[in-house]
Amino acid sequence: MTINRNSIWLIVAVLPFFLRAQEADFCISNVSIFKGNDSILLKNQYVLIKNGEITAISTDKKMARQARKIIEGKGKFLMPGLWDMHVHFPSHDTLNWQKLHLFTGVLHLRSMRGNPQELAYAQRQKSDKTLTPDFL
Image (cartoon, one colour):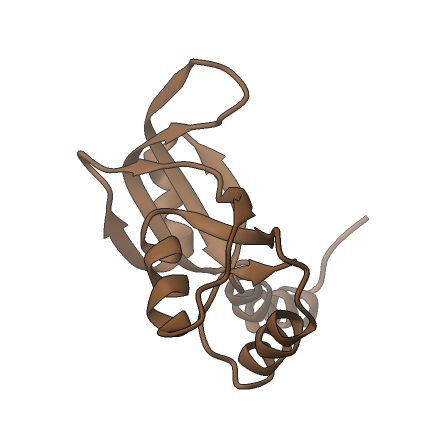
């Protein structure tokens, strides 16, 4: 089987589009990862993130080349988002209260009161696209 010159030019012309499609939004380099399901700390990891999701984790430095932006993670840690399964929704300053949870790694909250007003508030926050923890 032989490849003619036109086929080679077609491959050369199309290849950058395929390579670009594989590109991650950013890479966190040299970060330590705590998985949460054991006591092992993974050091000097490279984490690729695309569209808000982790797509790859590796110790291979070359992986960082796949990202548009590199964030240095030396001396920093990544861990899974946390749940707080027993919260009492405050009657005032709820947005700051929720943001405090985010700053400490809590991404999900479970209210113990079961008040319908709390659920309505949580749904309103989502529709406003305000960055707050998920609320049950």
